[in-house]
Length: 188
Image (cartoon, rainbow, N blue to C red; front, side, top):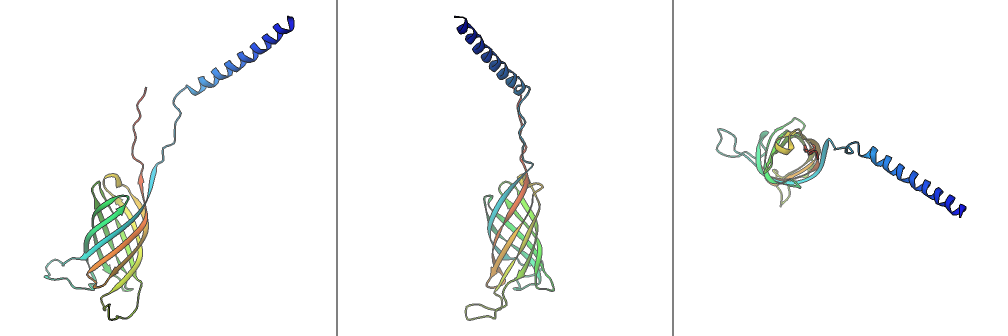
């Protein structure tokens, strides 16, 4: 009987030590909510397709294909952002590169930046193409935006094609980095 009592006391001591340890762990954890690290930025991969048309310059009555500078405007569809309108203003450098600024407006806000396009073909015209057909490859930089894209940055690549130097189709791929959305917490 004495052995059973000692065994019972030993089991009770182990039980008490276990409960005390659990209570101590719980009291440390209950000193406040555990702080989670919220990311400071959100990186979004984008893939866009745009269809742009050279605009008639101010004071002119028609469009001049292969203009040295100008403005293009049209539609853009960017996954996962959505559909919108894009405007580009460009200048042709001595190297033949098209450099300029762009801005795209979407339902929730706008994004803008710069681009640099280099001619990517030097083939002579054929029966299906003309002197005004061209292809370009290059890069873009996101400089800022509005709405959820305020303080946006990013980079990517562009490829553009035209058959008449008036209508351009472009594909853009890259990433846009935006500040993380602000969250609010409520105290219980």
